[in-house]
Length: 197
Figure 1 (cartoon, one colour):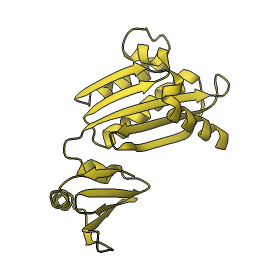
Figure 2 (figure 1 turned 180 degrees about the horizontal axis):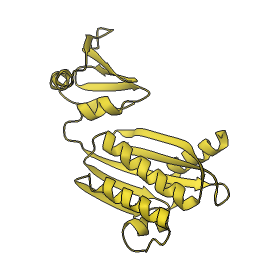
Figure 3 (figure 1 turned 180 degrees about the vertical axis):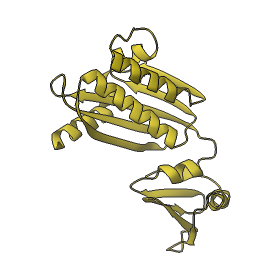
Figure 4 (figure 1 turned 135 degrees about the vertical axis):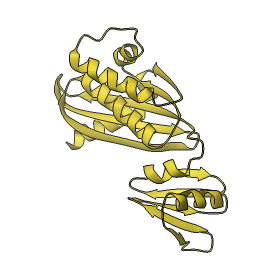
């Protein structure tokens, strides 16, 4: 549930300019409410809380400067190849902004890792962040994307190109390898998705 601290009247104008309908609040504390897609933004005196299943559109409209986010990604398969899943988490100073874990059919571990990285970057782009610091526990994928390792597999080469295209859309980015315990939440999302498949 994203929380954006801001001037709520300026935020209201930004939403109105984007043709989002504004309604009065439901309680004495709520200044106004705005809904789009599967989410509702509720304005208080100095902050806006976004509720609902898909807050991306509203949050992107409300963030003034895009801001900076940390993106954690993980992918895995049971069997290699085998049933595969991805997980990603977007974290800011406000905590976890968004996360997702889902199955992707049959894939290798490396294919799943790339798919998770792509999904996390697409989510950060959709949220309107202009700076991302990406972390994953696949040393191979991190080094391939950074150009330290070659990518011989044609499918992985294609995915690496997609990652570079997404990264080029940010003003600033970093990509680093972290141990699995630092990437625990994304790893957990992968396992939850595979357990439910």
